[in-house]
Length: 390
Image (cartoon, rainbow, N blue to C red; front, side, top):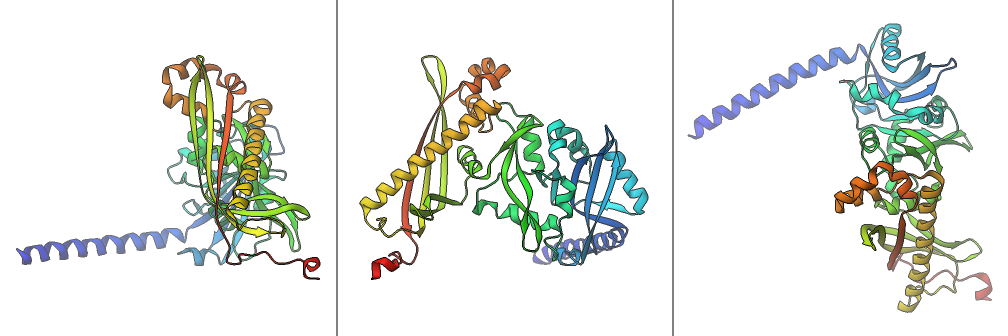
């Protein structure tokens, strides 16, 4: 029995090696004839009805380290994405390889006219992948952002991919991949959002930065929400995985920074006198990472309770603020409250769904925050100020 089993295992191993060897040779030969895409920027063309596609490409073949040997940009204008892509192949004489593409950046003009028109090809094409980050350029053309040369050590697209992977440490923007966005566009009871990217002045020139979000009605962008307000949108969407909460600031007591260890948000639809309401409760565990003022008592149980209460009040105020922005300014349910109603009260949702934007704008939402300060950093006592030493 053991001899037969050994023979079978040997056969499987040899077969696997042969397949891997053949596949590797085929990939090596083919990739030399391809242009590898790192990032994509989509803007409106100069003429009416035209779009401009800009690709960030990387030189070399093999693993990611080799791909970072060099990079360049290709830009072409046309009436449809597929037409532009085919003409790029014709002009460069090389096929386009999309598997390493990390980001799609849309200009505001494109996003406001309807993102679906320009990403439809990318979703349908068999050679592309939907697990690619998608962003909206806040001010500049998307191509200007993609061409910014602040990161000379690697393609900007790869750098942006790293920044988005680390976004959970900051909670200043949502992280959206293409399949998330397209799924949300077609999901009743939740409106789409995308992160904003912009260029800011830096000592070495302009540097790409990510923060804030764009609000959509289906696939059409309506406007933006600031970076600070975005944090509380993410609280309401239960998408906080880290970040910092502050009370006061420099010369504005108490000057406390709390690091978010974990957070959970519960959204519960309830019926009150036949009308649906939403009750939101957040549970956030934090550590004290900074205390600028000595008079702040965070060592005693009483002092921590007072700090917790002040932070809870701030969080409720900020969450109520972004709810008002969504209800009154945009009439878009970017929190997914409608989706929660759909799950709990499906029959009621059938009545509310046809004009949910209007229903959402009048929806009663109550918010409660629960903050726990679990500990502090290695230094228990704050540094003494000069006037206290004298």
